Amino acid sequence: MDFKAPVKISDLVRKYQLKQAGNSLMYANGINEIHKVRTGDITFVDSEKYYSKALNSAASIIIIDKEIDVPDGKVLLITEDPFSIYNQIVWEHRPIQYLNSNRGENLSVGENTQIDSGVNIGHEVKIGKNCYIQSGVYIGDQTEIGDNVIIQAGALIGTDAFYFKKIDQKYYKWRSGGRVVIENEVEIGAGCTISRGVSGETIIGEGSKLDCQIHIGHGVVLGKNCLIAAQTGIAGKTIVGDNVIMYGQVGVAQNLHIGSGVAIYAKSGVSRDLEANKSYFGYPAIEAREKYREIAGIRDLLKK
Image 1 (cartoon, rainbow, N blue to C red):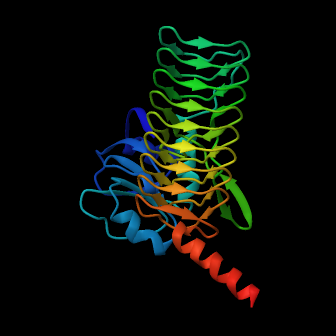
Image 2: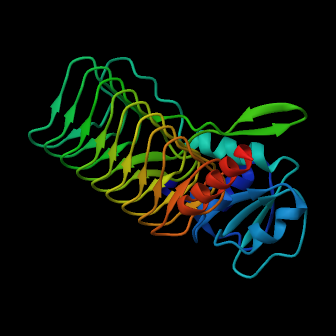
């Protein structure tokens, strides 16, 4: 998530009563969870087992719960509750902007785009040329839609991430500061739900086609020219390559990498990374040829 303008670290120190170690003149360009950080970003860590990952990440500013040596080129912001400070900063820069009509502020719509009645569009949304958006669609804040996109009735684009942190046996919601980007020539079927990223982008790649009743989780990156059939669910932060086909009712777990050219057959459950240019089937999904041999072997045993 990028800030609209760079934020001076000393201002954060004063506002949130933090202790600082490192360059007091540094500015932050954005704030991101550890999976999405870039140089100039703020991130946080509140468990020693993740210190190394955070300190060696691209993040320039790290909110941390303990005083330690400062790595070269980084700033540490020390507080007892790093998650709370992180979340407050996101809330400050991505506050809820209530929608009091069916069109938000700063909406940009390209030529020859048709938006049916009954469509609700949030703030700071960009929609390209020659699109068709059917009645009952919701498009959340900061969503970006390319050219020649079709979004069928009842689709929900840019809903909050399903992302919570457990503290003292309670679940606390992360503020969803990311957005959804739908590239050119995409079709979104009726009743699909595409969640915005926690801090980064959920991306639907150019030329991809989604059937009805599909859920795309927060921060998913779906490649180009993918074909996804009905009732499929892809969990948060999974990366899907180009030219992937998922048949109906496929379930894909979080934080996985699905290689380009993969085909996943109906009702399969994917719980691990999948190599490119292969077909998979079953639960847990394995190479289809291997799975069919396994099924045939079981049938032979049952006949004996």
